[in-house]
Length: 431
Ligand SMILES: Cc1cc2nc3c(=O)[nH]c(=O)nc-3n(C[C@H](O)[C@H](O)[C@H](O)COP(=O)(O)OP(=O)(O)OC[C@H]3O[C@@H](n4cnc5c(N)ncnc54)[C@H](O)[C@@H]3O)c2cc1C
Image (cartoon, rainbow, N blue to C red; front, side, top):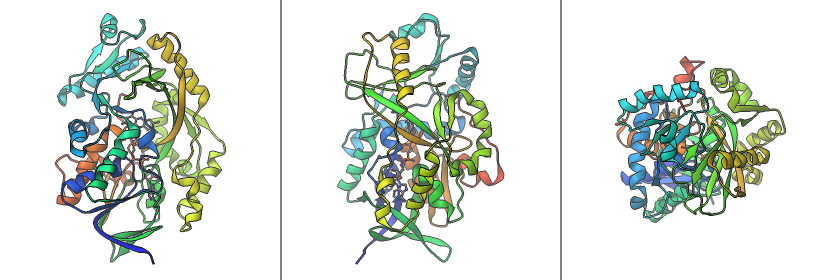
């Protein structure tokens, strides 16, 4: 006999967006059930670089990221848990004059939104980050930006949700939505039949395939990003920083997270899904040619196999897709550690003790997709490589939308229907 659940809101996906949404819904007194096909934060939310930053953002995201930062400041106290949130600033080093000029022009956005960012040049850069080598043209710096721990954050929120009596089910794949009279009225998982007034799809990279069968179109592509960490050591770094070649973030455990910098190529591995939406990403690709390495490899067939398993109603087929294994690009990570050594002058050279990779979901205009798509169905996805920082603001706004039917922060720019009217739409971020 299948178990039955009835709640106000059912959530598909236990990444940071699903967990944050669930948290702010429970804060409003709504009953919630969250379903995760693998483990909470098993994909992007647990494997990212841990930057929580306002600087360099697309202007359209500024109100949301500012709200998010405010919420991050309180989250540990609220959930009685540990996300690793620390206000430590963010430093982005320009690789050329054009980047520096773009950073300069972004200061107008900072000013408009009351963010105290500055451009550091010459000795001022070394004053702020003594480890950084000389010779860089300059950097954008925002002392009020922050970092948090991807491995801790969503699991800590999920633990708090459970303590509050919310249903959080892992290893529980959502197979389909239930519709009645043109409305979404619940969902079907591999274990439960769920009735809900509203369903939220926060399925990360899987959102495209989950939603397509209901006529909801979210154009998503993806890039593979590889990340590593060092063991704890006396590294002397305090500010999460990125240069053109390497990203270095001090970790809660005393080590460093290392990933590739702003202009190093992330891996774009062709799939039938990305081919279907490729034209829409042309402006983004042309803007970031140096930042993408295109490959045609086994991922094409793997993705077809995973998609077919994902849409299947046979749980025996889910093992490969519960927490997908994504092999890191070891050669690129080794380059990253070499750049870390030169750009931040570590001596002796640093060594990675662990590495991993994950595919980050992207929309053509590089900003999220948030809003109601069918009666009773809200989508919060397409975080485009910076959803960890945005997550609490997104969760709070989605909860408000469901509870009150409107939001304090305007979500118009994130309208899921925008891609129907606009084929090409490039990102407007600087970082
Ligand atoms: C390497 C890397 C570095 C990054 N660095 C940063 C950074 O420094 N700062 C920043 O702000 N952002 C960063 N990001 C982006 C950030 O991690 C993502 O934007 C964010 O985590 C997206 O959260 P999400 O909840 O939407 O997606 P996810 O974390 O991918 O979660 C979606 C979840 O939905 C589940 N799911 C899907 N379909 C179903 C189903 N049918 N049933 C049940 N469950 C389902 C999946 O299993 C998954 O766990 C980075 C991303 C990567 C990959």
